[in-house]
Image 1: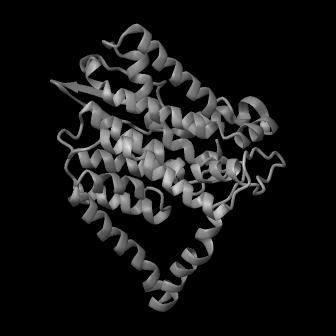
Image 2: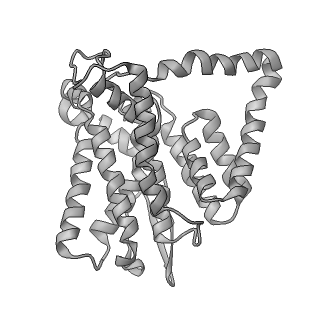
Image 3: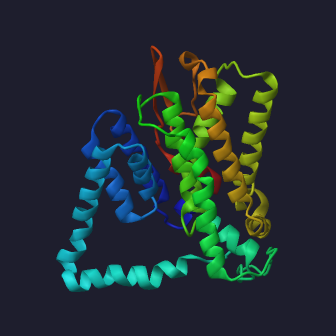
Length: 319
């Protein structure tokens, strides 16, 4: 709802990322690079998808992306001139970027969470949830350190080059990276968390609608984690509990906590991907709202997480 009500472009950025992944799986590296570059040029945080391809040593996508980033962003230099255009970029780095690290309760990124928990910075809501009163700059550095340290876990699980672009485990890597984007951005309002949809699609399809060889107890636990994360991420929206309670839930970073749970769940599914029957995966929402097409072929699976008309869902909710 926030994406439409506040004229946000996040769902279009997600669309660009999904199209880029789709083109990558088809071997259209230049087109994948163009789509990622366009997303980065509109809002910088799709850059994490570029980092993923760099880590996986998919250098053709990386080089095409860097080329198109330079070309797209050179437009401003042609319009304003080299000197003034560069001044705009430097001004953004010097003046805008430092102001991105805020403790506002609506900022559900990890940076916002750590600032609310470890500093007495104003959350703009009157509800302070801090456990300590540390220096904000040191907390910012600690957040970087914590992210870098925890990132070792998925980096280990995702090690090695991509062998099958449409393998189930690889698709879970794509969805994991997209899910992590709002947490890693310095500022992440609720509208940013539309990037969780691919992870939600994948988790729901595997846990709810796909036969597996997981032990019943482990399957029940995984489903419990999924539904709890959905309550924290979706159930705390204003449309369900009202603006006041929603602000309180955001002060306690429940959206962030739910997102972390969804990330951990995807890591678990990634490690257990061989336990699922790939020939029987099925997933669909009501026509003209969301679509995820799963097409099985031999031992591999081609999944295109289609992003059809989010507008229909939000229009129904707004009525």
